[in-house]
Image 1 (spheres, rainbow, N blue to C red):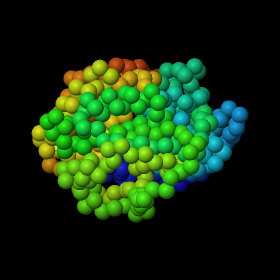
Image 2: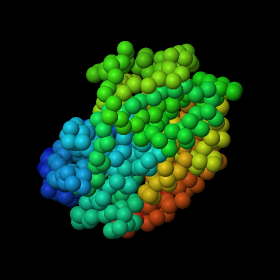
Image 3: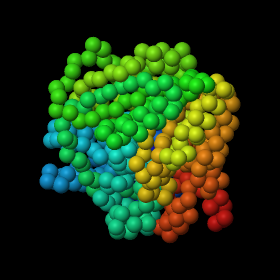
Image 4: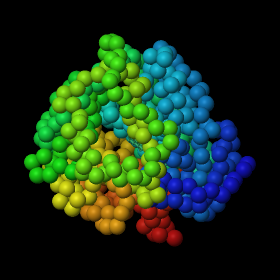
Length: 443
Ligand SMILES: Cc1cc2nc3c(=O)[nH]c(=O)nc-3n(C[C@H](O)[C@H](O)[C@H](O)COP(=O)(O)OP(=O)(O)OC[C@H]3O[C@@H](n4cnc5c(N)ncnc54)[C@H](O)[C@@H]3O)c2cc1C
């Protein structure tokens, strides 16, 4: 058993903590490490791509799952894949795409581990077809605080399952996963990109795209004001047997993170207007599916300043009004997002700590600067006023009172956590930030 001290941070560089870190080589070693955990508990960490404090644990322990990446079995008849939690989404795609299979959720990045993606209950570019990854998970095997391993699914140990998926590692360690991969209808996708002049046009275009497109998401121009608020570029993609077209220009993939300057550039109104105007009014290409997938991985940024993510889900009825208000307030206060996206989600999440609602999910990244915390806390209040749910998975600023207001199944999550981990052996900075009151009451 080997532990070492290490400073770890979130991908957004807003939070970091020094912890005792272990990296088990085999699943059989995981319970042995668990026995050695001290008073500040342990949190498990996949690829560490959550933005804030979800996978860090100040003065406590952190277990990295990167080496727990074995594939246990694959059934080509049913598509059932059984594997360890440290396998990345990209590795699954690279292994199984040549055999004609794909992951059920198409995320923006392939860096996430399967364990981390389930613990965050991720939503993808096909959220209008499959709300979140949890819906395609057959079962998870979870190592609990008392060292026992339990299988949970939508039909077996259901409450445990609903707390573990989207549970941010606070219930136990996912040590094995069964997920059904989908048969891919074709190798290529026909990708259509089209500008929309305002939010009405964009939401209508998204709603009509969900009837036919396999994937759809929109980029938002957050510099647009007045009648143009919510304008953007809608990207849709559907499988096709047509051959791939050779583009006259294709975005180069940057291996090294780009310096902070480029991130700042992406947040300027000038860049946004340029991007909007240069986007085709109506463009179509045929691309290999693997090229279309994981768009966020083509460019990475290095930033010392830190990036906050604000992601909120709204019902179909409240969504347009809430999103208009958020974008209008951003434009009025000249707060620019360096990344802004809108997707549709098919149904309410099944996970107790999940945020997705049937309707819209808006996702905004902001470079940290003076006064931004207060503005984002205000946006959290705005989301609450529109019966929205701010996602916990990459957030740094939610407070316990926000959770109580937004998460109707919060009590159930707390009950499962109390039942399976009364001593809070699984804990993190995130856990202490949002469930501190619960802890104080116990002491
Ligand atoms: C570039 C980029 C693109 C993204 N795209 C999307 C997207 O398209 N859709 C979306 O929904 N989200 C997206 N995210 C955010 C995403 O939700 C999380 O960052 C990701 O799922 C975390 O995976 P990870 O392996 O990095 O987990 P980590 O960041 O290491 O951990 C995330 C949480 O999962 C827990 N966890 C990790 N492994 C386990 C395990 N084995 N058992 C129990 N708990 C575990 C951790 O304790 C932590 O609370 C994106 C983030 C980035 C940086």
